[in-house]
Image (cartoon, rainbow, N blue to C red):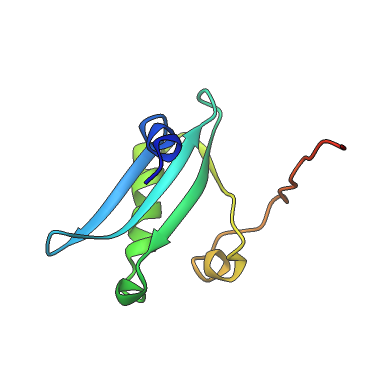
Amino acid sequence: MSAKYKAALQNSITYVAYENDEICGYSRSLDDCGFYIYVCDLLVRKKYRGREIGRKLMECIYKDFPDRIVYVMSDADGYYVKLGYRREVSVFEVTKEE
């Protein structure tokens, strides 16, 4: 793991799921100064998928931050639709012209 990503984890809201002392999934989110929570990463190892680990990690976020709106930044739209979440906005990458 890179030093840059370790620093990102330290400055994020991070939840980790374990099974039999093995990390099977995690989520990383950003707190927008009390306004919103943005989920940047929700990852579950392939061999643990289908066990609702991703759903449980998401539940941790809105359980710990019940007064916040939670947004997910993802390219796995179908997964979040399956969880019953509603599409609200799109995310665009801003690049500077060279």
